[in-house]
Length: 279
Image (cartoon, rainbow, N blue to C red; front, side, top):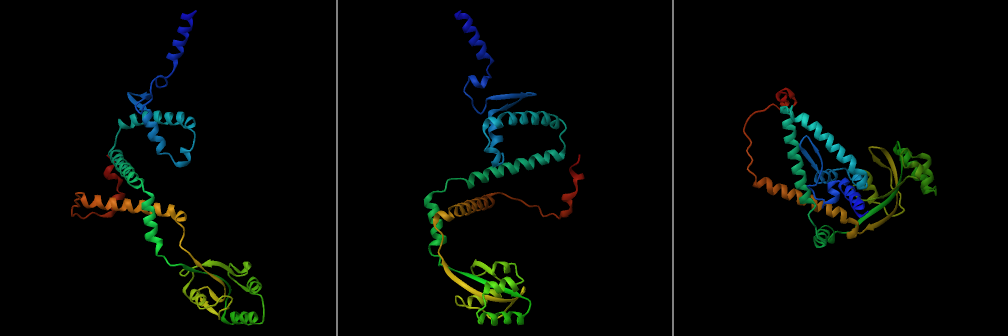
């Protein structure tokens, strides 16, 4: 009886895939196609290059499909390799160059950035920043100076600005009572901005002409916009620091590289001549 159980256990063990019995490494072979091994490492590398939404999928969902795709690709690649053209050789060289460069830059960009470095970048950018004045204004846009002045006269007699805007403004903010919301200097056309800066809160401007027509402007409020807190801009700072780090490293390597550019005249149209690489 013991030998019967032992035999059954051994048969079950032998039926398991080799990588389930032994320690799995990047070199563990999952399939061999025409003599070329496809390993666990190949699947890991493939998954790391998937779009982020696919990387979120469970491994058991991805495993079989990825392996099958690599097997099919190897079958097709073997056929293509036997019929390699100049265009294919050049394309492979370009792809290899691009992938290596991209992986190197990712490594440079994603190297650790400490909290101290982030704090220093924040202090440099925001510590000495002065508060920025924000303006909240409404306007009524009409086609002529006379129409604008007539509205100003009605406002002086006690008419409601929002009601006049809803009734008369030809601008998109008219149905909203002419409200433009909060903005800072540089966000509006120069003539409009100059008019706003000259107003006191709750004051109405004289007619203001811009490229859009004639405006009646009401400054409803102002406030001081303080510099953002560190946590509000941490992501922005990190992105800028990583980009600066990449730019600096690329510039350093370009300066150190031996780059020769022959002084020859080449018609740019040559890049459309696929006959040159068709053999």
